[in-house]
Amino acid sequence: MESLTPLVTKPKGSVGEHLGMNTNTTAREARTRNLARLRKLTIGTAALSVAATSDFGWLAAMATAPESTATTAYTTTNTSTPTTSSSATSRAATAPTATSIFGPGYVSSGGS
Amino acid sequence: MLATADWRAIGTGVRLVVHDGDLAAARAAVERVLDQVDRAYSRFRPDSGLVALNAARGRQVRVSPLLARAIAGSLEAARRTGGAVDPTVGRALRITGYDADFDLIAGTSRPLELHLAPVPGWSVIAFDPGARTVRVPSDVELDLGSTGKGLASDLCAAAALEDAGPGAGVLVSLGGDVATAGVAPEGGWRILMAEDSRVDADGPGEVVAIQHGALATSSTTVRRWATSEGVTAHHIVDPRTGLPANTPWRTATVVAETCEAANAASTAAIVLGRDAPAWLASAGLPARLVAQDGSVVRLGGWPEPAGDGAPQAWVEPEPGPEPLE
Image (tube, rainbow over all chains, first blue to last red; front, side, top):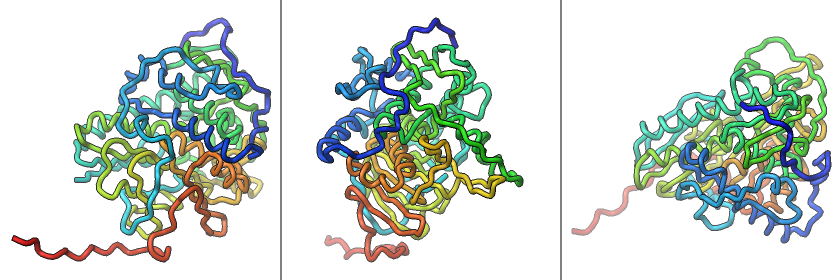
């Protein structure tokens, strides 16, 4: 790794970022905002070599609302979009739905 | 047609399920990704990019694209969770005893000493994604465990899909953090809820299916170890205290569009404790929380169990009527 002279974009925001661990916002507004952010937090990278060359163009789509402090530090201007899988960025902007079913699973999800 | 492969990598179990595709090619793709992940941000190999970054003693360094991506994801998760998930827990995690691959810790017979270390907070990280430069203060260690496994699942699923062939679908589970891609099998991707992801997937318990997206579970009951003070520690550090989270939840399972997001949210739920339901509701994420007494809280549209909720034995469906000529 190279060692560079210090001149970096430092994320804004106060030290001690644990102040936000409360729900003191309108639930609906917060939900809408968070859904929008989740929508943009996608992977969709088909190959790491694509990720290496894309300069995280898809991260440029992440939240840039004024109250978004740290994200302004890593929003890029690269608009290239890496190859995506069919499941991620083309989906509707809501969390996937889980349905309860009978029968065995293909995989277990628990602690590891 | 479904084909499955199981093996261990990056200190956890890997399950790959391929629907109508080339399993061998998909597995090779997953193995390549996991090797790159290990080299980029394993905390337990001395030559990883993350270990080198943590050893840089405050110098600004340029990191690999994958490590930069992982750091970006961890910082975004810290922002979205209000710091409940925080990559600067590395030092606290290490001195609570999680200083080696968990397989080694689990095998130790001596109690580990419990020490306290403050968690600096994610805002101390100077990160430029365009230049891929990072500066971590000299007394700070990064750990990407709260988002890194989920990210790895996502990347593995994408790579596996690319090599599995046209029309295929894949599911990748890394220790129960599940990412899917491509065409789901009929009825969706079926996932058994369990305390431990090593449980047989066709065992009793709640099973949910997702057509796309991801699901992740965080738990305080598997990665646990004894300390010399007689305290049982686990691997989910509360950034507010620097100690293993004192939480009412045994497990937290979250469904999200990506496994990275699900991973972050499930970890945040453990840390947030009684505040988790409200936070999950504000985030719009379906979740299943299991309390210490075994009771289950279902949130954000998480379905009730099929039938009466009792574990169901799998019964082969009766054959239908003979088709007419």
